[in-house]
Image (cartoon, rainbow, N blue to C red):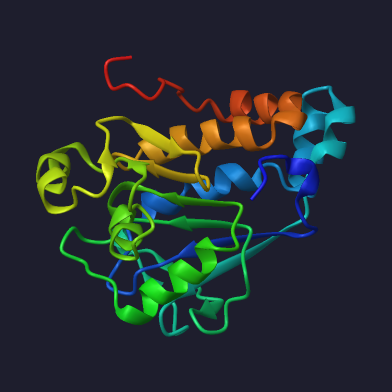
Length: 225
């Protein structure tokens, strides 16, 4: 895995894993922030900002909305439904995988954990948001790594999963193989902004333009900040 965006394939394959029992709608919103770096969108934003030259920094992106069976639409919270494009067996290797949060009592099936393990070996980055950590945790992805989760669950997790280096932070990046995790729901946007700044550092001006226009609050990793 490399952190240099110049080595990304074209198109960039971005996957969003959806729990069929119901994923929190707000948890998957950060994929839309990432999509602002898509070529056609970035070009329009750059023109509007009076910096048309930044439009050349965009990516072609292909999106994959995945659940276990491939059947959809997938029920989300808030009454929303998301069209499913792939099952865990038909989804190709991804470059970025985002996992939104299910109900706190969710436990992934063996098939889901195998899918996540397989994708983890290929992706450039895996990002969990809020209770999305449950999928990565039960897949063994967090073992030996730094990670975070919703604040109210951390005390119990430190006892239940001592193999993970739990941190009480808004978001955490473990650099061993680029695994990101966020605490509460809206921390996912802050984590995605930090991810974009790091992963696409060679396109800094374009990233900063997008983040400024979207007005994402960047409060830092620490809750006290």
